[in-house]
Structure formats: structure tokens, C-alpha cells
Image (cartoon, rainbow, N blue to C red; front, side, top):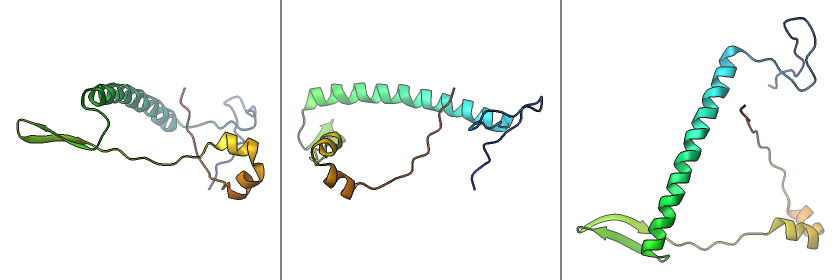
Length: 111
């Protein structure tokens, strides 16, 4: 069930359309979400750096990585097809529109 987007300030004035006054609990959860995302971004940056260094050292082919007679990792290479949507939309809008499916995505932005 969607929340109403009409909200009233402490002074009884209506807030702008599309604005919702939230509880302290929701504001706290948004702040926590922002911190979690910050940590995730830092961890992703470190993981990407390490991944590039490892691939640079071992190469890009299917391999099992062994150190001291123990398996410590593996490299798997998969090739997949992707569609350049922008080009398809420009060159064949009829095909793009026929195959396009609507999807819903909810995004929470934190401040």
C-alpha cells in the first residue's frame, strides 16, 4: 500500500507535492543505509583493485590456482552476449519497442 504524498509541517502548512514527512526511525534507517552503502563502495573498490591485480598475475583462462599443494582459488571465463540497447533503439525502434518489457525499480537515495 502506497503512502500518501500529502504531508503537513509542524506549523500546519502543507508540504510540497511528492514530499512526505517521515519519523525519526525512518530518518535513522536512511542514515544507516547511507553508511552501509559507503562501506560497500569502499569494499567494492578494494575488491576490484585486488581482482585486477590477480588477473594481471594469473591471466584470463580457466584455471585452478594452487599454493602449497592447496587449491586457493580458480579463474572461470564465461562469454555472454549483450545487446547495445541505445543502438537498437536508434536503428530499429520497431524491434526495440516490440521486445521491451516494463520493469519496476524502487531506488532509495540518501542524503
